[in-house]
Length: 349
Ligand code: TLP
Image (cartoon, rainbow, N blue to C red; front, top):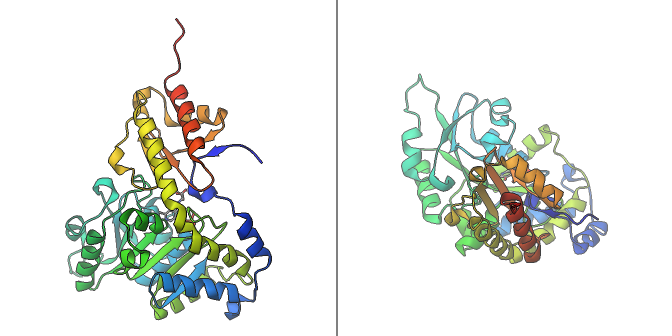
């Protein structure tokens, strides 16, 4: 085992001993025949927690978002989302490749969309312009720094969209972090959306897996698309066994990650040359600008790596730290010490 302090992402979390034991003894069957009892339990539990008719287990969040996009749109349509959204920037342009759609991106302060920002971007109902097919929200918003869109804004967007027969999908990769911040159950936070994708493999700590939740009919169709994408996973109850533990116990400790992120953010804010909007640090992601240090983000990331701290770069100016169950408060304090040294090395006289 290495002793890296790994702040690159919460996707790096390692399965606990309890998960490994559950995986070793999981009851399994062929899920393409619907016969894996552990996957069936996970899907039923996810549907229950989100208060939906059905859920489907998937290998990744990307697959969940892309299946939802495929089902909610027709080729030649536009998808409205925030300009830094994961579906637009990190999903291999699959929404155009697989679903034949285009994005009309919207810039929103702190990544938080409102109906006022969305409404002017909806296509006019004339035959000679591409029609809006879908609205996608991301909560928490990863590249805006883990920010949370308030429930009232989400509900207004969904209600107004539905009045116009538009569907709304939630990329809820980290929706449990949003729910902790909002102090509400995920079912309440997500109730107005037509479909929700969430990940087990990030802060919740499972090694693999995401779920898509929605109506029974929608999830039945999602099963066809998952199979077409090669996502029929047979005896994947081995993975679902870890997922069940992640789903049940993962959310109970996420607040610790939020406290650690705040510690990192406040520590970073005090370093000369680092610019960070502290109000955006609401969950487990900290994004800050290092340009005033005179160094590129990649230089700082390389220097931190030499000290045993792994971090992500968003672009030449921005660094991303993500806290998770495998980094402690002490690790964060140590990471900050190294960041201070790397950004502001002692000058020789
Ligand atoms: N995010 C990853 C990278 O792809 C950027 C990360 O390290 O944060 N939606 C959101 C909001 C995400 O942040 C991610 C992954 C996904 C979807 C995709 O999930 P996976 O990686 O399971 O396909």
